[in-house]
Image 1 (cartoon, one colour):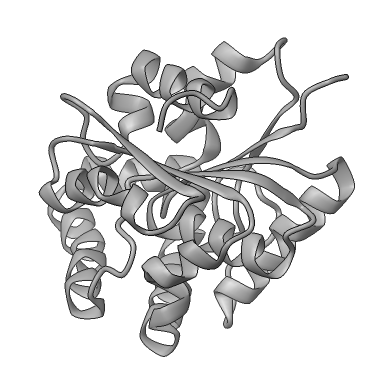
Image 2: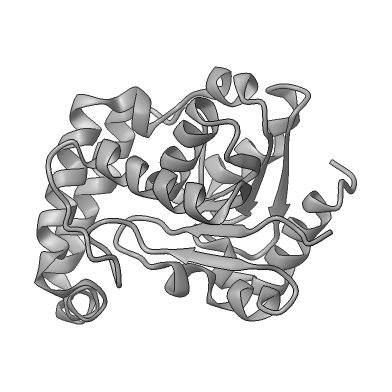
Length: 230
């Protein structure tokens, strides 16, 4: 029996290939890999609009409905919350969930400060702004604004807490790097959330662990899929 599809959802102002390029190369041929660029990002034809999370969530649900239920691997506070909401509202579509660069229940104030850093860095680093332009075209500013507005209006949707993860029917695994204390601690304590939640820390990796430690990340996800040690 063929394995279920693997869906890859990137983080804010990234793309599936930018965040998970090594995994796409490793898994292509062994799994049916579907790299999803979210609205306003990369190759996605849909622009970012108001009610961004609803629009992006509907888009991802449409993709999974078309290609079939599968394993979802999601990064940070864009792909992650969208995947969690999908697993909660459409459990028929998500067979398992891997979250990376994610801390359940992060405080809204801290998150909004982090989000504001995107604007500051882009203003201070022309090279970074040029990279956003290359990946997404000029629409990246509208995408950032639309997402930021949803973060203010719907913090629980963007920053779901441990109770939300505990209630999911799908097995959920946090694969975080060791560089950020909050992310490291979230992965180390993930098993305490509930019997279907687990976590692992990748030494030497930062926020985008799949990029920083690609082989270790790939191995950790595959161990989770095979039902290996928590």
